[in-house]
Length: 109
Length: 115
Image 1 (tube, rainbow over the protein chains, first blue to last red):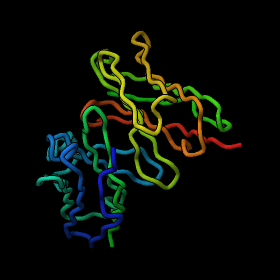
Image 2 (image 1 turned 135 degrees about the vertical axis):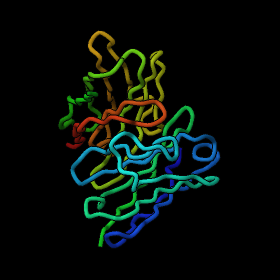
Image 3 (image 1 turned 90 degrees about the horizontal axis):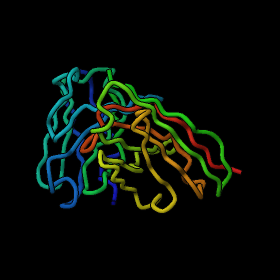
Image 4 (image 1 turned 90 degrees about the vertical axis):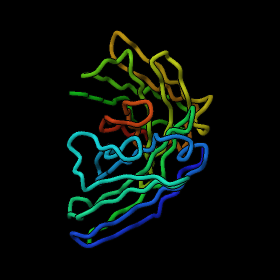
C-alpha cells in the first residue's frame, strides 16, 4: 500500500496550463481505470474533480482534464485561474484497498 | 443532496480509545460504500478504512487490528472505533462516500492523541 508519487509543487501563470503527474504501479493505476483526483483548498474538505481517469462530476469546469498512460496518471488544469490555487491529490483503487498520492501544491503566479 | 457529517473527535491520551460517527443522508445508504480518510496536520490524505454494502470492511496497514469500522442501517451512520491510539494517529478524520472514488466528503473531525 505505498502512496502514489506526485511532485510536491507545480505552478503557472493565469491563463496557462499546468499538468500534475501521479505515478503508481501495476497494483493500482495501471491495473484498472479507477483513478480519481481531488482538489483541497486550505482548511476545507477535499472535493472530487476527476473520476475514472478522465470523467468530471457535474459542476466541475472542463478546464480540468485527466488522462493515464501505463503506471502514470495526469491532471491538466487549463486556463489557470486564481481560485485553482490549492492542493491536488490523486487517488486509486488498489484492490481491496485504496491509496492516495502525497499531494501537489499548485501555485498560480 | 448528499450530506456527510462527522463527529466524535477530541483529545485522547496515548493508548486510549475514541469512537467516531458519520451521519449521512441524501442517498441510498444500504447500497453504498463509506470510507474514512485522515489527514495529519500539514500532511496529505491517507486512506484508513472502507465498509461496503455487504458490511465487508478493509483497513490500511497502520490501523489494522486497532481500528474497527461498522455501520447502523437504521441510522444511516457509520462508525470508526479506534483503540490503542498513538501520537501518529493525530489527524483530521474525514468520512467520504464511494467505492472506487470518494464523491462526497464531510468537513472532518479532529482527533488529537497526546498526553
